[in-house]
Length: 201
Length: 155
Image 1: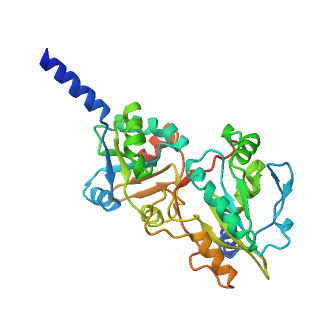
Image 2 (image 1 turned 45 degrees about the vertical axis):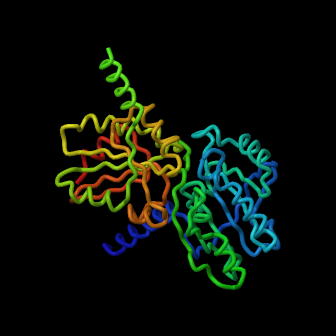
Image 3 (image 1 turned 135 degrees about the vertical axis):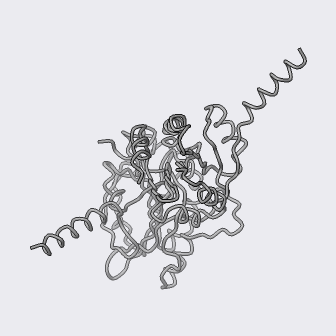
């Protein structure tokens, strides 16, 4: 009886822990259907020829995320043709941060002529599934026999300000590895970013 | 009269010239190690981070309330080093911040984030409560009451 209780407790705590942390490297990703800035719904399954995806949690206002906007566009330009398109998602709640509204996402995407989808995540469901914690926060995925699998979580590079002499392009390296049938050498990195503005409730 | 002008001038330069020192993580750790019974409340923030800016007054209040206790509030900015003079110093003087303010001078985020706390994702605001016995890290925004209670209940 006591053992059963302990097992139950362990299970509950594991579940609770799993919920707060989201996907880990190696996990299989559930597909989603989110509204793009052109009002059309985008799912991972829409990309029939994709070998994987670069999922970028980014937003309208965070200076770090803004500093990376051009680099995100460059990633899409370089890797969509190789089978790894960028799919950007705004993880912030517009109720908590009005400048993160769908309308303002449309304005930004137009102004910056985003060459990739920029998706709205009502109620932050997909954000929680992934366990995104800040902007920018990148998840590199690849299609494997098991499904769409997380291969890398973290930063785009280690040079947010520009001018790091020992710059490493983490996302680029991860995709180059995947493209040549290998696993990324670096699967997780950390960087300073803006915390996600969660729905108040 | 001349003396008066000089005094005025020096007062003006003093208030404008807010002190924001560059800080290496090794120096911070050294200070904590030498801190005897002092508890350090170390807030990681940036001028561009709106929730950080919103909670700074709570830290100022905490500092003022504990001025006679072995408590030190340190505000460690993660702004870009190139923004020190253009943004961080003017921000500190405009907001009349009295706590000690630093700008973290570490080139590799990947490294320093892990050194500050293994569980830290790098999102700010984040706050470290640390003394010789206890080290508690929070990746969250604090309300005034939460901040007070966290310091008070630190064991």
